[in-house]
Length: 246
Image 1 (tube, rainbow, N blue to C red):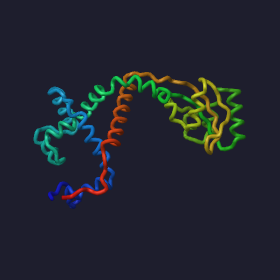
Image 2 (image 1 turned 180 degrees about the horizontal axis):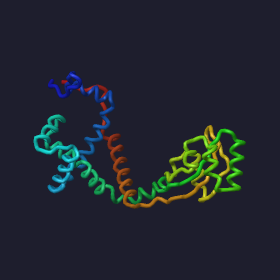
Image 3 (image 1 turned 30 degrees about the vertical axis):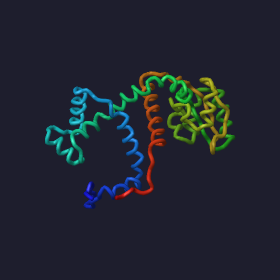
């Protein structure tokens, strides 16, 4: 069997590579790429787009002549057609996402919105309940004291920002803190609450409702595509315990 790879003076045949692909868990990624390529096979770029993307690739890789391009191809074990498919793949995937999933974006966003809303909140966490209780009453008496007290007493990285955290998506904090924030109004101070090993004092500063703007729309397309890809892997891909050899 012919050699297809040499690494540190050791040669590998195609038969050698199959166990290695399994060992390094590369087969699932390979399956993803195969399914993606099949999905976008019918999507073509214009001649102008091909030229523009190729020129950008050459600039990024400092390939200033056809000889340098060919040397790069030889080093990668690729031909010109494979290179063109590789460098236009992102554009073709984006077009596939738009063509296939654009009519599902609104519904997907509505379903996900409660998880996409963002919050800004202040946090103090300490170990001793009596300390938390004292700090809570001090903040309650003077809301402007939260930042100073957080810097002095809070035992997490939030101390560096005066207790201020965010904006973060509502599900980013600890689940118990996220549950608290979801029921608060901006400015509301929550009494000391145990969260794991800590006693926390939380105040919701701002609630930012998610909007289906251009970046969010792209995120929804990406999520729908990734869900389709994961489902396709589950349904269409089988990883054999051992390769079949002739």
